[in-house]
Length: 141
Image (cartoon, rainbow, N blue to C red):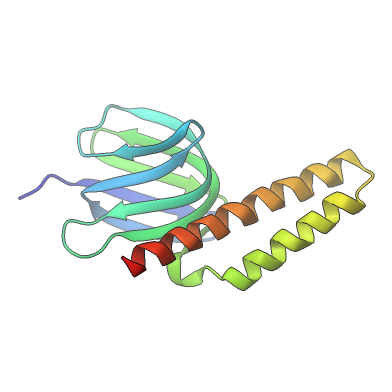
């Protein structure tokens, strides 16, 4: 039997996943990291992107997160994110519209705070669109 690690993924709204996994891949600030059973303890910031759970049996499960914190303990990985969406909740049209709204807001903004908000929304929308594209490409292969 392959080794597993307990994974809990929680957003501000709900618990999205709690179960065993062979591995977890997450978008950390310095690039994608992989967490396997018996990984050394770690706390790191996450950025917007794909969070992927590798199951022992069955296909991988992907989610989009807007960022957050990942904590690794000897037998538990916890992901805390403000917003997390399961693959079936991702909407390419809505993400594209959010990107376009943010672009317009950045062009129209004269206030630095409004510009920074629009820029953050733009980055999140781009990350979600990239995640959707990755998932589409995986399904084709």
